[in-house]
Length: 371
Image (cartoon, rainbow, N blue to C red; front, top):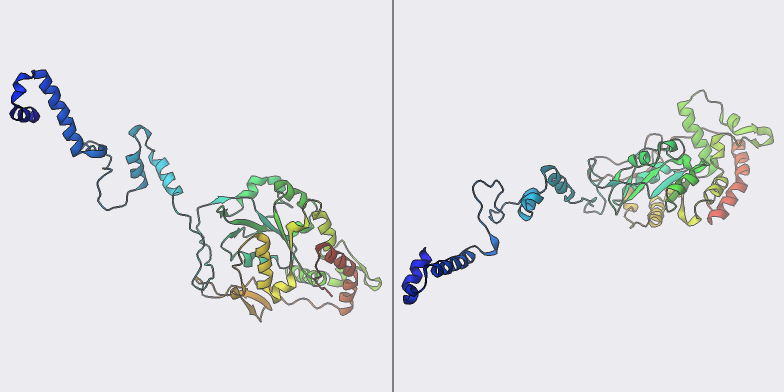
């Protein structure tokens, strides 16, 4: 109506226009004024609309649900549950941060992001070779997540299925490697075929050690749990006077590395298996872990600055993490004093293992010098 009065004064000839034309002209001009006052479709909301204004700059951060309700029409807005789920998915993925000295901080215990994946790499052996040390050392790396306990999936729980196995794995991001370790895999006949059925790309790590020393360590551990165990010589020999070794005893059989490796090479190329020296893991842990990181395609983050040698245990330990009050050593059983074995028995076992060791050196292209 204001437009009609205005143009009635400004245009002296307006009395010649018909009333209908004046009304149409005034409506058109009103629309132009409206567009000038409220550009870009900033339509004011009525007090009955519960949705907050999308254009009011009050300085506060908008919730994700509110932002979506501003962008979507009312019939396409997310439900409260969907919006909450989407908001959770949009949270940043916090990777492991490193302290100022380059030492990665320990992973948070309540991580809820990432997915559970089948392992990219498995420490498959051997018992009393140093598998726990390798696992604990490589877990320092921010791009590695590992199951804390031995799963025994491929040797004892295979009938539970891959979904059960995946459920035991930690959550990982796409950039991280999932690992587990079960030392008995290396000597279990069915395991290589079963792992290859899961994935032929799985990387395998075998921690080997002088088989004579390994057998004595194995016996020492068993004796600590079973004090009435027969003597080492009684178990290791069928006839010690003749030097006949009992290959059926598990502590002896595990050390026949060449025989076990032949089984693995039926399903995996040698380049897909990495061998860690249990002896060098003690004398040069950083060097051995550098080779493990190279094999896994990881940046060399675990270095000599992470280790110190514990003279009491006779074994390397991890230096104090930033969030801990003490250094991190392996369990009490690591570095346990071995049972004293008769020197003649040890020499007989060295003679027994020598041809198997030589064959193993030839197979892997490396002399471990177990003499």
